[in-house]
Length: 290
Image 1 (tube, rainbow, N blue to C red):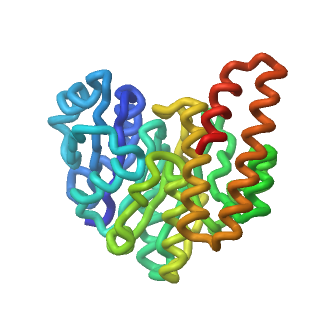
Image 2: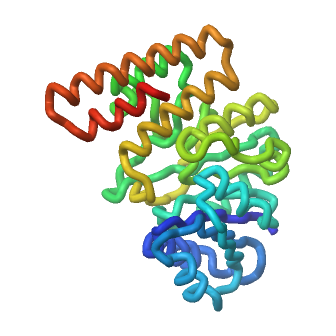
């Protein structure tokens, strides 16, 4: 088997069904003949969508369904699903995506021909067809500062290259990796519940002397309608950055990164107080404590 496509469902039944339908539209032959498989894990959904999906998809070939008894987060859920995968390559694909062409076959072929590339990130599109910046620079101290002052949103750290290109890291919304390498690395870091686990994984991939590349010759729409909210995202990004620096960087860099995070949280808290924004106040009160 060439490819296992891993998808997590957490209270996103309709999105998950649309994602799987798009895969069947493009790869019905591969899924039914055993060249590809979909490994779908329900991450302890609270809306009953896991059981509904199991019932709706039970007659489709090429789907392995897993039910988790608890919410394992993004990395943990993908790790659990990957244990059941049989493909030479793993594609971690968000449930809020739709695959519009047969570019996954080309991505598999590209990895077959380039043995030192460990991770291949697929081009993502916004709903309006514009490019979604999903190739990212590592958050070294300078880049972390740019991110915290809001410059990441305007393209300082993120891009969508028009050519196949070596990059620092790619979005976990559509990330292909060699299964043997993923297993050697013990998968996504279990200490990261959600957010930045893709960056951390790509960092370790490169420490193993493999490259990370961006692959633009594919069309995947990423709707960005996941199962988390903005405060949850901010707090987990804070936790992820601190964990990344504590685990992979010298202590002095961890100290500076922590100072930058605290200053951003204090500034946002003050802004929230001035503007009577209860969301900012509550979120960054918690961020300061991290």
